[in-house]
Length: 125
Figure (tube, rainbow, N blue to C red):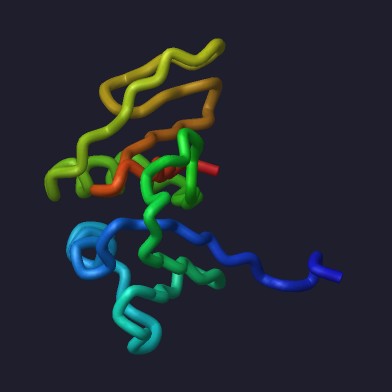
């Protein structure tokens, strides 16, 4: 039933206008359509990223959205860092870290937060 449908990453924020500065200005997303003030919709590859206002923004302690960027991971991390993104460092079993990038075998990953504390993830997958 749902297996043939695209999923939408849904991220709660405190203020849609402030969030748009991060998602558009820092991460480079372009709005899909003009939404009603407190809802932002972005295209991300073949999927959609929905950012909306909620009083529960930033309360998720787990990853909210993940992007597989393949061999471009190091360049993506470098570019985001140059735009002021601060990367999270986790002490997870089996992972080592080189700078802001976590490694396990040939798999690379990096985590960062949006202004509301939502955890976002890029990886080489």
